[in-house]
Image (cartoon, rainbow, N blue to C red; front, side, top):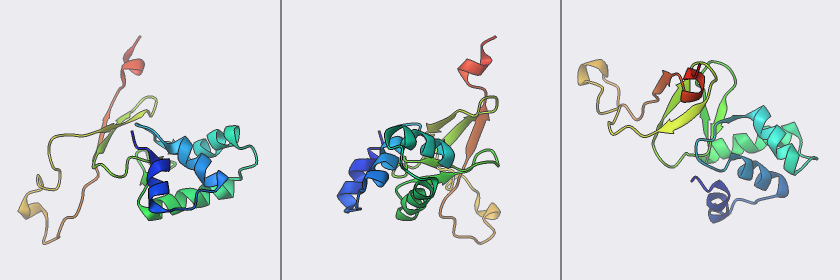
Length: 138
């Protein structure tokens, strides 16, 4: 589990009620919510939280490196609290469900020298696509 609120406390990040609620909404495994989804869920816990506060908090969390901004479908970005463990994403092409996956191979090491064109490669983002079990059911 990501335990985002605990990581933020350990960093000494000031957890106002609004920031705490955003962190709690994002906490967990396989969490990949849009900003609007974060706002809706945060609003259930703290009705007075504004959309601007949610967007600002998400931006701060991304800048801190505590949350990843993930784009998998060319539409709304999603926010992933699993920023500490290198992983890729598996996306259902039918319903859009996203799961974190941890392949045993290093995608950077797998890129042949001839295909690096002199770049010092520091990372890779790979998205695996398929159909989830729920969408496969007739």
